[in-house]
Image 1: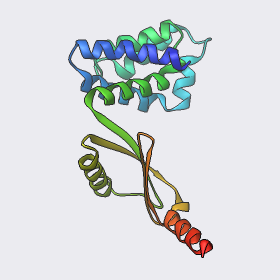
Image 2 (image 1 turned 180 degrees about the vertical axis):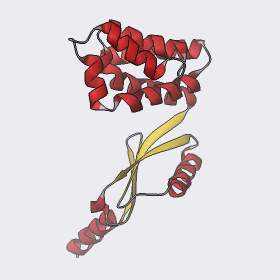
Image 3 (image 1 turned 90 degrees about the vertical axis):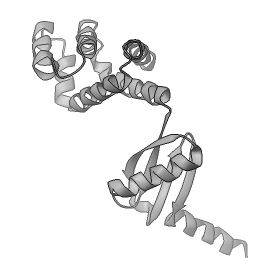
Image 4 (image 1 turned 120 degrees about the horizontal axis):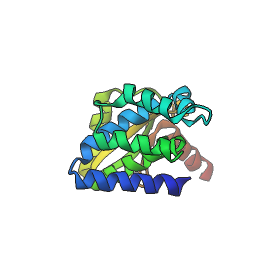
Length: 176
């Protein structure tokens, strides 16, 4: 299913690039992803007993005129080809293609508690300067870190958590 999703994402990305509207398509696909994250909506559109015409009507009410015409038509195509169940994976693949094209490095930041927008921005700015690339961090809370943060970007881990430092201290003490 990954290869199917990637092919659809690449096709939509090629269209976005041709239209010179990568950022707009990216924004639209973020909206699509947000809607389809609701399992009941995804189940409705994936259900084989529901007529395609009914699905088209719901899609029209939800998206027509609110997203790019080609993105809307792309969703219609996914319904017609019975690939709508792949829409979330397609959205993720499409987002990654956009990030690559725009030179954005995506990573994760873990902390023991929820970080504020300002804190995340400061971390992103510091990493952007260090890596010489624009960095976008997705936040996750991990209470086992106790304090501090851990960042993963492009398979590189920057661990400045209290749990990590305590582990280092424990190793040092055990060596003596």
